[in-house]
Length: 393
Image (cartoon, rainbow, N blue to C red):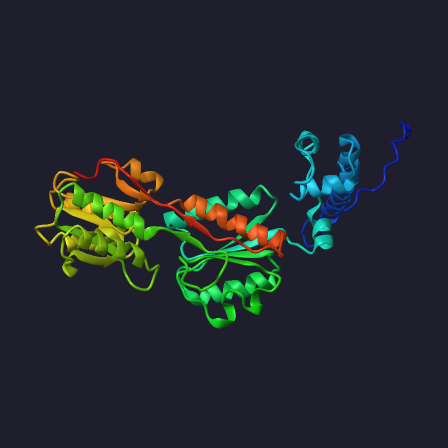
């Protein structure tokens, strides 16, 4: 007799985990992957919704020119002109009140909308022959300090001393609709790209070129002749009679005025010019080192005037390698007054030329030409100054 026990609970038959051939089924893995995809899509949608909500809140918080005008108690036009550096006719108190509100709320103008209205990109191109050169790096620093404060950005172009690259960059900058160009060049520009040509219509140009490209305005001239003349005259006054010079090699920036100052100072000091005392090299530390090694073969030499401070630093090394000392055996003078000139041993006597100010004023000339195209751009002459340190005996 069979005794009936309790019925087992009803269960659905389990899905097969293995196929007949023994391979594991992908069913469960597929279902899990599908679930993960669904959760990922849901999380992404939620994130996008949150970002949109945040952007809407930020848009509500963003200060407008109209709100600034209301807070300052002036018109929208007044605020606009002050923000675009055209508010000189307003009182200092009004300008200060506007700027205090701008700074307090960290207001940033909508450049995209502004550019569409003003047809300006708020960018300027800057073409230089060598970004690693100490002189040009200070020019760039001066230019950036001026234009950045006015809301302009700089597009930097390094030509590596190639005129072909210069022309290519000019074309590219024009294509990119920059508002103007600062252009440092050692070259005479082709007629199609010369100052005043149609190429620069609607794109003002300021050259930093020692005046080799003829023009009536926008000339930035450094009194290099006077600086070199003063330096060599100082060596003569200290009793030196055998004075050499390290000058630039051909093909790069021609510092002819520095050489002319050297030669004329010798003549006016009653000394004869000796060609073997002048050695050419690149305007770099290595160039100064190599040129000085050659120059130091002249045994009677007591002083060296260097074309720039970088050459002077290389000159120091060449002097020390010969077992000589600065200034006990050889006096050295540089040109530029780079920051590092005061930190080498001994600190370098040099001629100061205001490279930072050159860049700053070049940028000022350019912005003036952009903002006030009807005005004539001025010329600027920069003085040099002999900085006395410890490298001359």
